[in-house]
Length: 473
Image 1 (spheres, rainbow, N blue to C red):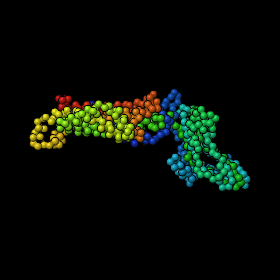
Image 2: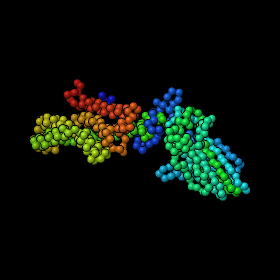
Image 3: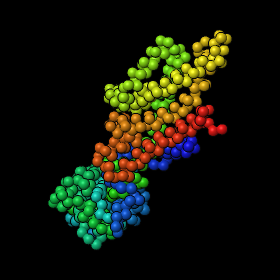
Image 4: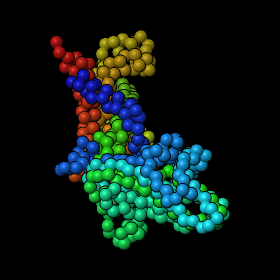
């Protein structure tokens, strides 16, 4: 039993310690990793096709290398229009919103002669889509125009199947002056109502399901159209051209209602559950050991006072009391740990007291007292070593209660909102009505059960090993 329990604890200990290495995501802040409430990847097969995975079809969307232009199919309307890679200009991003892509961009260059000209450049990037119709995609592009003379231009982003309909997702305004780096506002997202209204004339249509209706070869296309007066030069820089397919299947356990990875929450939750269980149990055992030793050895009024206080606390339901105190103090993870520990020592104190009442009548205690040993000496040298075996056992048996108590508080919405625990995962399952999505609901419950079982097995094993009455002969 002890080895089985230790093996389970070691498993969760390693999972918690190695969480930053086995999963690259943050359990709280890594939102929108995939489509909300995505299934696990191993459940992605649905009939002939699979659920869509996360895809970023455009390679080197920031055009950081000169070779990135080779991935694009380029067409110019006239010899006066050229497309090249530029290593000096690059979309810098927007502080706190968009990180940008650094130096490097595609340059559409046009120069008119002594007469007005109309020019155009088309850049297409092809990719394969192999999954069932998706629920969401998003796209991005940044552009900047520099005009030397008099001209106007605009940029279009088009997407569609190679052998099917091509739809204009976004079109810039007609620019006739030099511009700073500009990006689409609102952003290009298939869930946006304005995009549905603009492209399809209704807000009830799902653009992603219509555009990506079946597996095949697709293309994202940028079209630049220019009208130049005589002797005018136009330079238009394009950067950060990307498209993202939001997967309906992601990772080992899918994602939650905010698109966060559930396996990441599970891994980091093991770390917190072990910390909560062990620290709370240590506080409870230390308090129970202290009260039990003093009450049992001192006796008299001290015993009466301590035991009556113990009885009063035993009659108060601990979980409702902790709920009230957490609501008053605040749902910090450390306040929860301390409260669980300070309200979990009463049973331990009674067990230690009953053991001390027997031990203090032993001959070696009487001899120590007759030789002049004071209370501190007798408790620390003679009583504590003899009750530590019971303390070790109670420590192992108290951890499950602390873990379950914290899980209950988090499930009821009283846990720390800034940390991800197994109880908080169960709360999210219940709050968002995801009980039928068992890959989200079952793992945290099983982890709580197995970790609690492990400490129970260790406690029983320690009892059999350390208790002479149970030790095998």
